[in-house]
Amino acid sequence: MKSQKRIGYFLMIVTIFVLGCDVSTLVAPQQIPTPVPGIVNTIVAQTAAAAATQTQALIPPTITPSPTPFPTPTASVTPSPTPTFIFRFPTAAPTEGIPGVTTSNATWSCKLARQTPPDSTHVSPGASFDTAWTVTNTGDITWLRTSVDIVYLKGSKLSPQNRYDTKTDTNIGNDFAITVPMMAPSSAGTYTTTWALQSGNTTFCPVSLTIIVP
Image 1 (cartoon, rainbow, N blue to C red):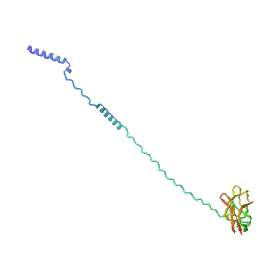
Image 2: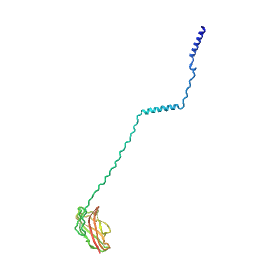
Image 3: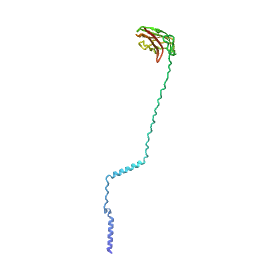
Image 4: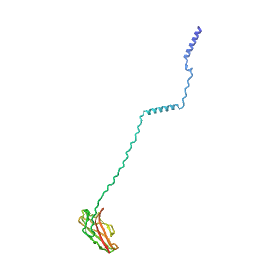
Protein backbone atom coordinates (compact mmCIF):
# COMPACT_ATOMS: atom_id res chain seq x y z
CA MET A 1 0.00 0.00 0.00
CA LYS A 2 2.85 2.36 0.82
CA SER A 3 4.59 1.41 -2.39
CA GLN A 4 1.52 2.37 -4.45
CA LYS A 5 1.37 5.75 -2.80
CA ARG A 6 5.03 6.25 -3.59
CA ILE A 7 4.42 5.44 -7.21
CA GLY A 8 1.44 7.84 -7.36
CA TYR A 9 3.56 10.59 -5.81
CA PHE A 10 6.28 9.91 -8.31
CA LEU A 11 3.90 10.15 -11.30
CA MET A 12 2.41 13.34 -9.96
CA ILE A 13 5.85 14.88 -9.58
CA VAL A 14 6.81 13.82 -13.11
CA THR A 15 3.57 15.28 -14.47
CA ILE A 16 4.14 18.59 -12.67
CA PHE A 17 7.70 18.63 -13.97
CA VAL A 18 6.65 17.98 -17.48
CA LEU A 19 3.97 20.63 -17.39
CA GLY A 20 6.43 23.16 -16.02
CA CYS A 21 8.89 22.59 -18.84
CA ASP A 22 8.73 24.34 -22.40
CA VAL A 23 7.26 21.55 -24.44
CA SER A 24 8.10 23.48 -27.65
CA THR A 25 11.75 22.78 -26.98
CA LEU A 26 10.99 19.12 -27.11
CA VAL A 27 9.28 19.29 -30.53
CA ALA A 28 11.49 19.29 -33.59
CA PRO A 29 11.41 22.70 -35.29
CA GLN A 30 9.54 22.89 -38.64
CA GLN A 31 11.64 23.62 -41.70
CA ILE A 32 10.94 27.06 -43.27
CA PRO A 33 10.23 26.51 -46.96
CA THR A 34 12.74 28.07 -49.33
CA PRO A 35 11.01 30.53 -51.70
CA VAL A 36 11.04 29.64 -55.38
CA PRO A 37 13.30 32.05 -57.36
CA GLY A 38 11.29 34.73 -59.20
CA ILE A 39 8.05 33.81 -57.51
CA VAL A 40 7.66 37.33 -56.09
CA ASN A 41 7.99 38.93 -59.54
CA THR A 42 5.53 36.45 -60.96
CA ILE A 43 2.98 37.19 -58.24
CA VAL A 44 3.41 40.96 -58.75
CA ALA A 45 3.01 40.64 -62.50
CA GLN A 46 -0.10 38.48 -62.15
CA THR A 47 -1.56 40.94 -59.65
CA ALA A 48 -0.85 43.90 -61.94
CA ALA A 49 -2.37 42.07 -64.92
CA ALA A 50 -5.51 41.23 -62.92
CA ALA A 51 -5.80 44.87 -61.79
CA ALA A 52 -5.37 46.12 -65.35
CA THR A 53 -8.04 43.72 -66.57
CA GLN A 54 -10.49 44.92 -63.93
CA THR A 55 -9.66 48.58 -64.69
CA GLN A 56 -10.13 48.02 -68.40
CA ALA A 57 -13.51 46.42 -67.72
CA LEU A 58 -14.61 49.50 -65.76
CA ILE A 59 -13.59 51.98 -68.49
CA PRO A 60 -16.46 52.68 -70.89
CA PRO A 61 -15.68 51.88 -74.50
CA THR A 62 -14.25 54.79 -76.52
CA ILE A 63 -16.34 55.73 -79.53
CA THR A 64 -14.08 56.34 -82.49
CA PRO A 65 -15.60 59.16 -84.53
CA SER A 66 -15.97 58.32 -88.18
CA PRO A 67 -14.48 60.96 -90.50
CA THR A 68 -17.04 63.27 -92.01
CA PRO A 69 -16.62 63.17 -95.80
CA PHE A 70 -16.10 66.52 -97.43
CA PRO A 71 -18.62 67.39 -100.10
CA THR A 72 -17.41 66.57 -103.56
CA PRO A 73 -17.05 69.83 -105.46
CA THR A 74 -19.44 70.02 -108.35
CA ALA A 75 -17.78 71.06 -111.54
CA SER A 76 -19.00 74.47 -112.50
CA VAL A 77 -20.25 74.77 -116.00
CA THR A 78 -18.60 77.66 -117.78
CA PRO A 79 -21.26 79.33 -119.84
CA SER A 80 -20.43 79.63 -123.47
CA PRO A 81 -19.94 83.21 -124.52
CA THR A 82 -23.00 84.61 -126.16
CA PRO A 83 -22.04 85.82 -129.59
CA THR A 84 -22.65 89.48 -130.22
CA PHE A 85 -23.74 90.31 -133.71
CA ILE A 86 -22.81 93.71 -135.03
CA PHE A 87 -24.59 94.63 -138.19
CA ARG A 88 -22.68 97.03 -140.39
CA PHE A 89 -24.64 98.32 -143.31
CA PRO A 90 -22.58 99.20 -146.34
CA THR A 91 -21.88 102.87 -146.80
CA ALA A 92 -22.72 104.20 -150.20
CA ALA A 93 -19.44 105.26 -151.77
CA PRO A 94 -19.44 108.38 -153.93
CA THR A 95 -19.39 107.87 -157.67
CA GLU A 96 -15.80 108.16 -158.82
CA GLY A 97 -15.00 111.63 -160.12
CA ILE A 98 -18.59 112.92 -159.79
CA PRO A 99 -19.01 115.63 -157.11
CA GLY A 100 -22.17 115.82 -155.01
CA VAL A 101 -22.49 112.15 -153.91
CA THR A 102 -22.60 111.69 -150.13
CA THR A 103 -22.13 108.74 -147.79
CA SER A 104 -25.10 107.20 -145.96
CA ASN A 105 -23.64 107.14 -142.39
CA ALA A 106 -25.33 110.01 -140.56
CA THR A 107 -22.56 110.34 -137.95
CA TRP A 108 -19.60 110.00 -140.30
CA SER A 109 -20.73 111.34 -143.66
CA CYS A 110 -19.33 113.64 -146.27
CA LYS A 111 -20.08 115.25 -149.62
CA LEU A 112 -17.48 115.41 -152.38
CA ALA A 113 -17.26 119.04 -153.51
CA ARG A 114 -14.35 118.94 -156.00
CA GLN A 115 -11.34 116.90 -157.03
CA THR A 116 -7.90 117.78 -158.42
CA PRO A 117 -6.82 116.42 -160.86
CA PRO A 118 -10.09 115.17 -162.36
CA ASP A 119 -10.51 111.57 -163.44
CA SER A 120 -9.00 110.36 -166.73
CA THR A 121 -6.19 112.92 -166.52
CA HIS A 122 -3.10 111.91 -168.52
CA VAL A 123 0.00 111.77 -166.36
CA SER A 124 3.50 111.13 -167.71
CA PRO A 125 5.21 107.88 -166.60
CA GLY A 126 6.98 108.37 -163.27
CA ALA A 127 5.65 111.90 -162.80
CA SER A 128 4.93 113.13 -159.24
CA PHE A 129 1.70 114.99 -158.47
CA ASP A 130 -0.69 115.70 -155.57
CA THR A 131 -4.29 114.61 -155.51
CA ALA A 132 -6.75 116.63 -153.46
CA TRP A 133 -10.38 115.74 -152.77
CA THR A 134 -12.30 118.56 -151.12
CA VAL A 135 -15.13 117.11 -149.03
CA THR A 136 -17.77 118.68 -146.78
CA ASN A 137 -18.51 117.30 -143.30
CA THR A 138 -22.22 116.49 -143.56
CA GLY A 139 -22.33 114.28 -140.45
CA ASP A 140 -23.11 115.20 -136.86
CA ILE A 141 -19.60 115.03 -135.37
CA THR A 142 -16.45 117.12 -135.75
CA TRP A 143 -13.50 115.50 -137.50
CA LEU A 144 -10.63 115.97 -135.06
CA ARG A 145 -7.09 116.06 -136.42
CA THR A 146 -6.00 113.99 -133.39
CA SER A 147 -8.31 111.09 -134.24
CA VAL A 148 -9.04 111.21 -138.00
CA ASP A 149 -6.50 109.97 -140.57
CA ILE A 150 -6.31 109.68 -144.36
CA VAL A 151 -5.87 105.99 -145.28
CA TYR A 152 -5.27 103.97 -148.46
CA LEU A 153 -8.31 101.76 -149.14
CA LYS A 154 -7.82 99.81 -152.38
CA GLY A 155 -6.75 99.96 -156.02
CA SER A 156 -3.43 101.01 -157.50
CA LYS A 157 -0.73 101.92 -155.02
CA LEU A 158 0.30 105.33 -156.29
CA SER A 159 1.54 106.80 -152.96
CA PRO A 160 4.63 105.80 -150.95
CA GLN A 161 2.59 105.63 -147.69
CA ASN A 162 -0.69 104.00 -146.64
CA ARG A 163 -1.66 106.60 -144.03
CA TYR A 164 -1.40 110.36 -143.55
CA ASP A 165 -2.39 112.61 -140.67
CA THR A 166 -5.02 115.30 -140.98
CA LYS A 167 -3.68 118.77 -140.17
CA THR A 168 -6.83 120.57 -139.05
CA ASP A 169 -10.15 119.95 -137.31
CA THR A 170 -13.22 119.97 -139.53
CA ASN A 171 -16.45 121.13 -137.94
CA ILE A 172 -19.88 120.09 -139.13
CA GLY A 173 -20.67 121.80 -142.45
CA ASN A 174 -17.04 122.78 -143.16
CA ASP A 175 -14.80 121.59 -145.98
CA PHE A 176 -11.66 119.52 -145.70
CA ALA A 177 -9.07 118.73 -148.41
CA ILE A 178 -7.96 115.09 -148.48
CA THR A 179 -4.50 115.57 -150.00
CA VAL A 180 -2.25 112.64 -150.96
CA PRO A 181 1.14 112.84 -152.76
CA MET A 182 1.32 110.38 -155.68
CA MET A 183 3.55 109.18 -158.50
CA ALA A 184 2.42 107.81 -161.86
CA PRO A 185 3.58 104.28 -162.71
CA SER A 186 6.32 103.87 -165.29
CA SER A 187 4.19 101.55 -167.41
CA ALA A 188 1.40 102.78 -169.66
CA GLY A 189 -2.13 101.99 -168.57
CA THR A 190 -5.19 103.17 -166.64
CA TYR A 191 -4.89 103.23 -162.87
CA THR A 192 -7.50 103.80 -160.17
CA THR A 193 -6.72 104.36 -156.48
CA THR A 194 -9.19 104.72 -153.60
CA TRP A 195 -8.62 106.50 -150.27
CA ALA A 196 -10.83 107.35 -147.28
CA LEU A 197 -10.95 108.94 -143.85
CA GLN A 198 -10.69 106.77 -140.73
CA SER A 199 -11.43 107.34 -137.04
CA GLY A 200 -10.60 104.34 -134.84
CA ASN A 201 -12.27 101.34 -136.49
CA THR A 202 -14.65 103.47 -138.55
CA THR A 203 -13.73 104.10 -142.18
CA PHE A 204 -15.84 106.70 -143.99
CA CYS A 205 -15.88 109.16 -146.86
CA PRO A 206 -14.17 107.05 -149.57
CA VAL A 207 -12.83 108.93 -152.59
CA SER A 208 -11.17 107.69 -155.80
CA LEU A 209 -8.94 108.91 -158.64
CA THR A 210 -8.38 107.40 -162.09
CA ILE A 211 -5.40 108.45 -164.23
CA ILE A 212 -4.10 107.39 -167.60
CA VAL A 213 -0.42 106.85 -168.24
CA PRO A 214 0.21 107.10 -172.01
